[in-house]
Length: 178
Image 1 (cartoon, one colour):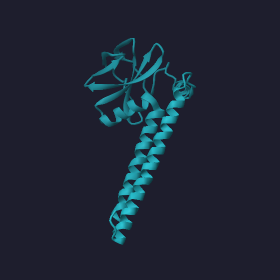
Image 2 (cartoon, one colour):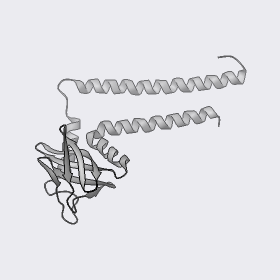
Image 3 (cartoon, one colour):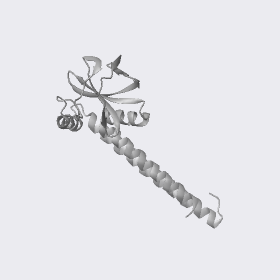
Image 4 (cartoon, helix red, strand yellow):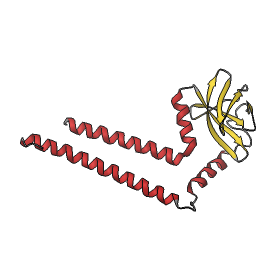
């Protein structure tokens, strides 16, 4: 195996990783991005599900001993962590807060992963409905066209890169100048 083949393999693996990460963030929405921010912080941040007037939303908060500092609609909020209110969600800390009363977290009973009025099935269904709804102004078609063009450009660029490496190998083998 030649060095160029190794570079092509590494480049294709990085490209597929980046395309997967961008796809996950594109289809996962804000909650996926917040999850990744908390996961990368290694315990310095906490995932917050805030109960708003319009439903549950996810936020990221910085953890300072027994308080959480986070932003909601441009205002900085400080929330005290109640005893037993932190639950583990996919290997990271998560709390529930009422956005109208953000001074304290919502306390959970022993063995509960989420509050009584938080319905994960409905939350998931609402996210799916929001992501699959048709857009009236045609912005969805524009996004699909732009994503198609981006994928096509990446594939063509990868092909050109492979052809360049093969031609450079061929010129080295024949002694010609490229």
